[in-house]
Image (cartoon, rainbow, N blue to C red; front, side):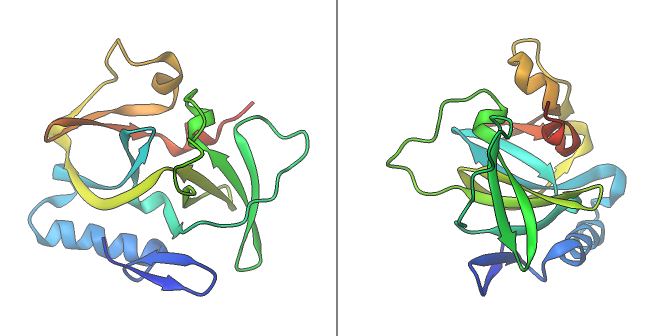
Length: 177
């Protein structure tokens, strides 16, 4: 995925925002994948697990940002950050998914900004990968061995070479409390 750094440490994929997402979807259709054949996903990694979120849900990708703690917020809420004058609630995916805290020697988290009901949210992940088309015939339901916390927020799984990609449901990820 190509990205350009914007002032303030903001990395924007392609032309950014939903316009970039629409362009990626159009490119997939032009490549013969079609709407029914593939859906575009942004890959990200959380504690070594490959995950994906629908590209059309992604507004921005941010490098390390200053996050302000919010008193009395749920455990999953890492705090808030400022994105071009807008307050963005930062959700720690490790906490949301019941995973151990990020090791102190690892780099700062990356932010995948999504929008729900007119509000912006940042999904904090260990790394952000690339935009990939996932053919519809490669999707499977959640395996019975998947942790119940993950099952609650997953739309299913997709085999990626020798790894299993867990497709996250953004609405369910943001349903906290």
